[in-house]
Length: 238
Image 1 (tube, rainbow, N blue to C red):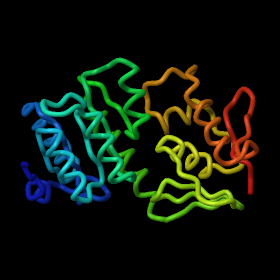
Image 2: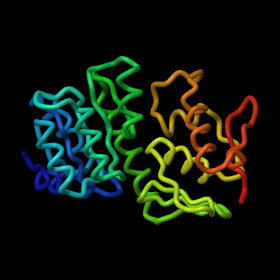
Image 3: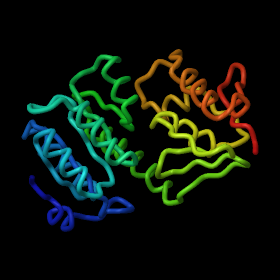
Image 4: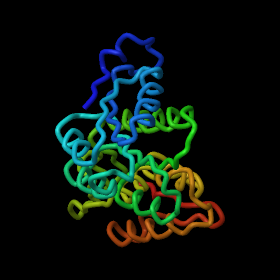
């Protein structure tokens, strides 16, 4: 593993939280070096590994603010690393970087719990922007719960309680419910939910939001989430 924290400390402090630590799991040396330099220039500290198993070991044993994971690794499929990591650390923010551009791969990774999926080749400015988005999102999770009437969302254990006991949620169910709870009483457009929960590369005509809403209703009550025709969804006020 190559540790670049010392170099990061010597660079200008551009970001609000320059000590944020990112793990980069990438087997191509040239790409890894390029990404690391861009992250360091943005004020982040970076740890680099070049195999999936090393990435899993380090991500499982250290507190990283964000993990950047290449999907195609020489020793183990990146999807396996993603799944195992989120089983150990469900709260870990992971952004997948991959040359695999087909929608099936993106959907699979996002369903497994990835926060975002960026297709290679990409502009470094876009990568840094997406890193900032994920780290801002993490900073909002300093509290342990969000409450709306009888509904409580546990931000660390990915569980919700509607007054009848704790209900486990998938990563996507959790992210969708959190987004709706942060806009309680407001109609949230489907396009906005697609962007904030599933990423940036989905067709607005996709039904993934509808399917996830249906699952949340089945788990927590069919009156919980209201459909706003022609717009999106609204969480019922408590």
